[in-house]
Length: 310
Ligand SMILES: [Fe+2]
Image 1 (cartoon, rainbow, N blue to C red):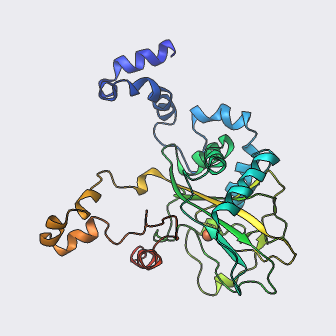
Image 2 (tube, protein in one colour):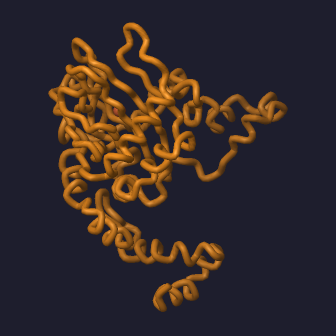
Image 3 (spheres, rainbow, N blue to C red):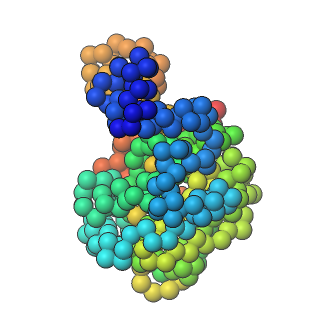
């Protein structure tokens, strides 16, 4: 640790509260000081500048800021993408008749190849610029898309679906779409409405039919989009499958400070608690409801998308 950092720890009595963690956090404290605690959306924090340059992410970040999405090249070597595809296929169910897409959910901790890409340095540095230093793993799910005769109708949305509009200028949710073999337009690349993130709101039903462009990615690269940008699924017109990991991260402040979830498991307490307490404790929230056999509780997810807009 630098002499300057040592001094800062001694001079700031609040740092004493951090104990041993103060040394680890000092570079971040310096970074906060540098921006006066006013780091703007898309600004790169001081402690992160060198890493962004080293990882050659500046161009992708500039494109992301202007258009709401980007294709990041050379995120992982081809052999890591091959292992990821194997892992996803091993964890996914079979394609059923009439359903050309299959997938898997709740994937962290279930295969080393998935954990490795989830903690990939380029992905984490990019995510930090967008959703902040205290980012959390939000959702990790995979999809295997086969050829379909016609595109899926509608479905254009912003991923910050549980935030009211106007969305905060600071992005809260970022999604990385990791295609194990790359993805071209005809191979089913995810589609976006460029620049729609600047509206900072959900699309109207009419806007949900907007013109879209594919995010084409070469093998080893990753597509990424802002939580505010309007996007929808791609349309695979060729044989074979598109195997993708959808990795989502979110901003720290979207979590409560106190964790009272233990109360929800206390039957005696819940039996006599005021009815409104159930909402305050998040009984109807969809977070954490996915398990190895299914995606999140869609009833709870839908309820949250309604309540969050009122
Ligand atoms: Fe989405």
